[in-house]
Image (cartoon, rainbow, N blue to C red; front, side):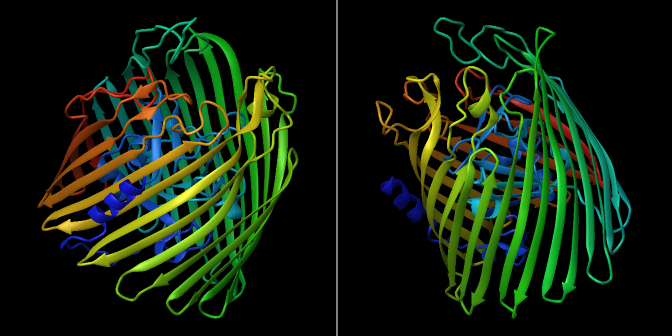
Length: 607
């Protein structure tokens, strides 16, 4: 690992003689729950805008997230299939996911159905890497992903997109936005329908693997969604915002117990901000999210798993002088499940009290946070975090941070009949991180190295035939990012080196944690030539294993995607892309297929 980190520093440390406009510094709200520039957050963050989504010609959230530094994806067979996100080598349920500030996900599985979130409804995504339980509570061990839906504002404008391509894929989106100078609104709808391909080449029992069945058919997917968002900023500085999103999916897959599902992702939220005094900002927020899944086998209903989650938040931000900000707040969360499976308990609530201090002293910035959670099921838990940054004045910036985090057990782990263990404790983690970033000749680059230790990891205990807090993990990593302009070409590169080691006792100690590649590289190259835009993406990942014993290896791979765009008339653009140009055969989850060479076109109208 040390050799890999040194190699990355040598390759990416010295910034090449390139130039790009780095004058725009995006404002991040997820990292600190307050509006800060990326530098001021003292965190490793990635921001993906609507412009970037359309430049990539992404058709799913998985496409958008692929190649984000420190983030790995495992997909079970194409569009609409179960998609797991591993942030900084932690578990797939160690990522907190918000949509417009509302916490989403399944309380039974503990994960979010990224595959069902419609990409055409998204305005922006913020990915914060590293522990954030000291601000958000449970799940934020690996980090936080917040998705913002389209907001609107300005003059009234319609927009439209139509597309299609390989696997008999068709997609469409339409909407209208506006609101003037003080207000904003957006109404939109989108849909996608694909015939898909055979999701899984499974092996049936007794030596089953993958989907444990042989069903060599095409596994399609359909998703229809709509969203609405509106708000207004009053003359006195008060601000109100309301939002709603609903996505309905129908998914076919291969499985021995179920092979079809109907899903719903739904949320409503509201937020009120006002200023009792010039130095005191108050934010009140409320939301409700639903995760619904009905499961079938060859058209026959088999099971239902529904989650309804209510969240409330009361946050106070106090400005102290010109460079200090004190935050204090209270969160409330209530989870309820409704299922054909008889769980011993079907609800639980959580109250969280949090505080944060941010300050700047000349070239130095500091941040400290503390949170205390009181959970109805497992009791009380306290987490904290601290970060420091120093600007050298020549574009270089050094940061260091430490944080603790935890993950509450899911309803499946606690109460699933014949499997759950109600005595489980939360999983705990401690993380340290060191970062260096800079600008030179118009380019921006960053290096972040970290170590995370996770204790009381929940795993299946063969001696009791139930989950138990028996595992440990030690994860080390390095992330390198560079964005620059080389003559007329925009260059974006990210490199992730990961050492996710299993520290559990027994024969698996020292093995690599499943479904994490130890190396990942993404390179984007784009150029605009008059009305044309051309681009290419190289994405490569090293070997990964599909099991704890590291006996089932999935080979490394590299794919190349090409894209082109032509602005043939005012407000009209035609886009085309080729994915997996060299038709590479690869897997991110064993026995589950990924698409080969495929072609797609899109027509966009946006005045």
